[in-house]
Length: 354
Image (cartoon, rainbow, N blue to C red):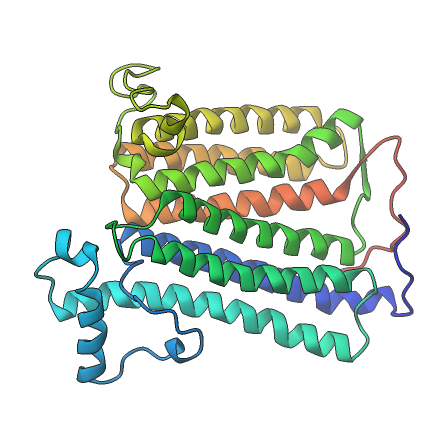
């Protein structure tokens, strides 16, 4: 399918490329702050969804007391944090408030430049539907975030791990699309010709990373990182007892903390092997530098993940683990967008420096 022609000079895309990179960076920021919110059990501290008014935190004693009173009505306060002081409530409140503020900021960082570029006629025709789609996904992400929070306001003392995983994975899909579009607009899509196998694995790798991030979100939602503090064994064995205790059997993959951590570990091993294999296969191609970087990042990520487990999930290391996962996804998508199988022609877009 041919791209719609545009009269805009290719070099004018450089500012749009940087805008998309900034949007991607904001997504990573909200992933990290959201991780801090989860690790500090702060996600249920704000019990109302106020997209506009909620930008401003409570400013008076009466406003703080009102927010605290709302929190005291949910099960998390009654069963976990009963007796919490107002000062302690403010600490968890600001984690969740910061997460929502950064998430809201993404909307402005995306929508305002989009309107500017659109009005100035700087957007190529093929890009416009993608831009509208990204804007819609951003709105959907906000709704999914509130849907996630509501799961912990009535019968649970935390949010549903299913909804948390969907929320986090959707954020990573937005990140991936922003990176992919930035490569295309930069004129670098399919510019690196590599053997067919290298191209195929490169294109599959972002999906493997996304799957691992989904599993990691289940770990976070169930506090499954605390299910075992050993490595390479779990509960004294490479394949521990208790992986299939729940019925039906498939529910163990989503609700049994030991199984969820085990699955995350195994998927991590697979991802590491595939990435190292890709780097070796691409070592004499134009993708060598990027695939070597991927191998280095995934190795560092594995080491961080092991340390997180051994040290009982310290907040700073767990946040680093989440940050490096987002960087790994960025580089994997960037590489996938740039490579083309040796038999396939490259796109005709001219490369630009951006």
